[in-house]
Image (cartoon, rainbow, N blue to C red):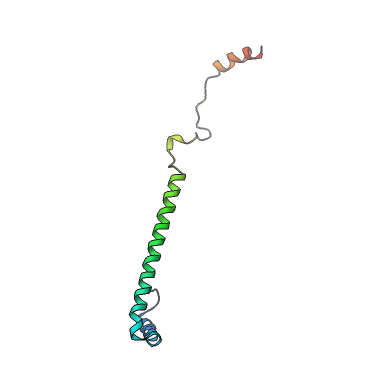
Amino acid sequence: MFGSIGGPELLVIFLVALLIFGPRKLPELGRAIGKGLAEFRKAAADLKETLETEVNQVEPPVRRDALPPQPGTEKREAAGPADAAAPEERR
């Protein structure tokens, strides 16, 4: 949870905070930090949800049948009907 901070380091940090803020202010400080972290997490989750919603509205999911054909995979038509119409277009 705290990474490389172990038990002795946490104890030193707690004692320094106790000396600086005193025993009466320390619980209030802990509550304020806890509320601040909770609000930050809530705001981050709301922002992430809003961004995902906007992205999904702007870019609809791509369907496989809506994609253009890949080069070399399109079907070729017989040359008969296209060649028959060519002399008539020249007139």
